[in-house]
Length: 114
Length: 112
Image (cartoon, rainbow over all chains, first blue to last red; front, top):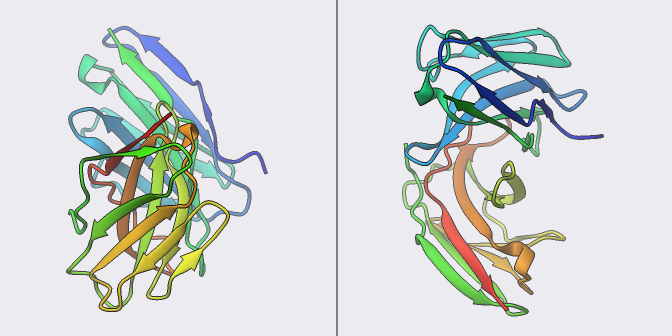
């Protein structure tokens, strides 16, 4: 398996623009997580899905953030409108519930909002 | 919520064993100890996990004390590529619903 695939790897945009980050989880995994990493706050969970259904979005900072998982092989994290404080690295991870219960992470998307 | 305590940073000579400690004195009976690492500019990478027995895989060994209040990750022969931030995490096993709380981790620098 190619692992968790995120796109784009880098995104530079201007304040006020819409940003969409994409994630393809590992095939067969039933959980998908979106994390954000900044120097100030470290790595923090934004939202996670189980079988394509959002379970906990308490980490989503504001209504400007939204996430969807239309099918088992694709998820998006959208920021609209974007602000400079959204600049961070966004990671997607997937997990198969079971004895190992290991989360596998993508390479991340580095977002810069100017 | 931080359930683990780790040293902020450590150095290790290349080729020597790196021993990374972690305290988790409030660990519950159904919580596992997981170790991840994050090499600069990459996503976190799973290393190893355990409940109460010592574990070994191709990457590392995990030693958990009998009272389970602390553990040590051992990289037997550290290389320069092992330079990374290492995170010790406790979480309930057997359910994917528990996200990982990463904390600040230990920054390991392997010195040539």
